Length: 150
Ligand code: HEC
Image 1 (spheres, rainbow, N blue to C red):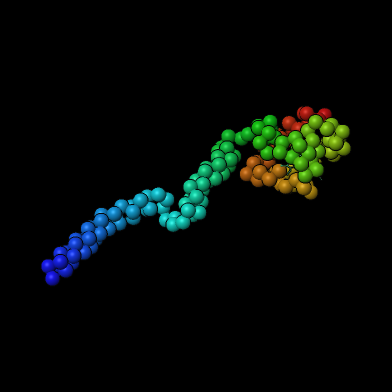
Image 2 (tube, rainbow, N blue to C red):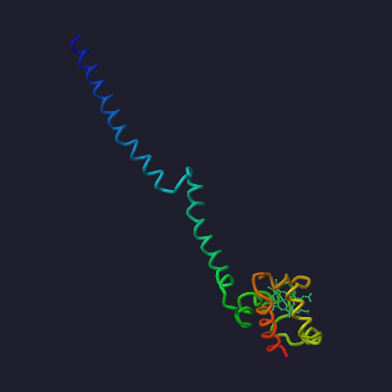
């Protein structure tokens, strides 16, 4: 009988120690998971949460210069927007260093070229895709091209 009692005592002691340990450790594990990465539960979600701010930062960085007030000059607009196609010939764009490709276009006159770029022409989207640029900034970029190809 005495043996039975003492083994019961050990059993209770073990249970109490286990409960105390759980009571101490459980809040710690909860704190850890909430501070790690917001509401994300699985590893995949946490990875997404961690890479998101980087992507957002790059987006705002790319759009920021056009949003401020100062107008951009021709070379700046050309290098940041137009060069993507006109330096490489992407999408069939006439290349800046191919004067022969430009000759028939130049012959149509400045105003026609301004209008082509502002409104878009075939594979070239309106304003080369940078619709936040003003007409004058686009004209500056066209003038820059004309200065190079004539
Ligand atoms: C997405 C690629 C792309 C971008 C960006 C782009 N262009 Fe073009 N551009 C083209 C293509 C393609 C053509 C030829 C269109 C055609 O005649 O079919 C063209 C043609 C032109 C022409 C001749 C238009 C005409 O009437 O013959 C001018 C001038 C021009 N681009 C200026 C610019 C300027 C300035 C920018 C920047 C603001 C710019 N492009 C950005 C693809 C682009």
